[in-house]
Image (cartoon, rainbow, N blue to C red):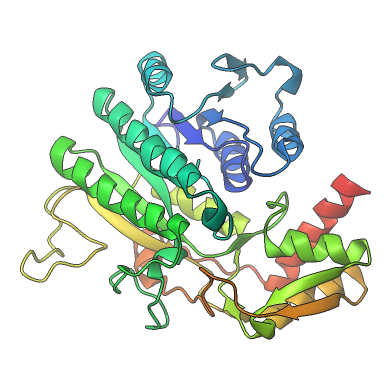
Length: 353
C-alpha cells in the first residue's frame, strides 16, 4: 500500500515519549499527523513542551482545544476525557487512522492514584472508541503493555498466554483496553490492533523510567535504587524499533472472518472480528545490572547503587515472543542495547548540560 493512501493520522500522546518519536517518523514518511496531548504534570511538562518544540511547534501558542498547524503536522491540547471536544475534533479532521498512545503511565504511581488510570486509560479510551464509532476510521492502533502478563511465568510471553492476573491498576487498565477494543470491533466493525509494548527506552525518554533515573543519578554523583537486589531482567526495546513497527502496521488493518480464528478454541490475539494483538519487544531480555553497566559505559563513570527489595506491582522478568509480529510486518526490533543507551545518554546530556 502506498504511504500516501492514508492521508491523516491522529496520534494521541504526541508530547509523550513514544508519541513524539512516532509523529516525527510519520511526518518524515509523508503522512499528515494531527497530535493530541493534555500535557499533564505526571512528569515535568517542560520535557513534553521541548518535544513539541522539536517537532516544530511554537509552544507559547498552545492553549486548550486550539489547533496549531504547521506543514503536515498539527497539534491540539485536549484531554481524552473531554468527549464533546473529542468528537468535534474527529468530525472536523476526518481521520483515516488513529494511534492511541495517550495514557496514564507508571506502575508505582498506580498504587498512589488509581483514579487517574480509570480517567485516562478507561474513560479516555472509551471516548476514543466512541469517536471512532461516530466518525469511522480505517484502523485504530492502541497501546497495551507487557504488564498485562502479570503473574504469568510462561516465558517468553506469547500473545495467547493467559493475561488474567494483573499486578497493578496500570496493567488492569491496559487489559481492559484490549477487551473494550474487541467489543467495538464486534459491535461497530472498527478495525483494532493492540500492541503490548515491552520496556521502551531511548532518547527523550520519560524521567520516571529507570534509564533516566539511573543516568541522572550518575551524572549528579548520587545514589540510585535498584530493586529486587538487581535480580531482574527486562526486554528493553528501543523506541526507534517501536515506532517503525507501528508505522508498518498502519496500512495493515485486521479484517473480519480471520480463518486462523477457531471459535471452539478461542485465543486472545485473534478474532473472527477485525481485531488483533501483538507483542512488540526486543526478544532478548537483559539483566538489570547489565543495563546499569551499559549506562556506566556510556557515561564513563560508575554508579552508586542502593539495592532495595522488589516493589509491589513489579515483575521479575519480561521477555517477548515477537514471531507473530515479524510474520505480519516482516520486521522485528533488534537495536543493540549499548547503541540505544548511548543514544539516550547523548540526548540527555544535550538537554541537561
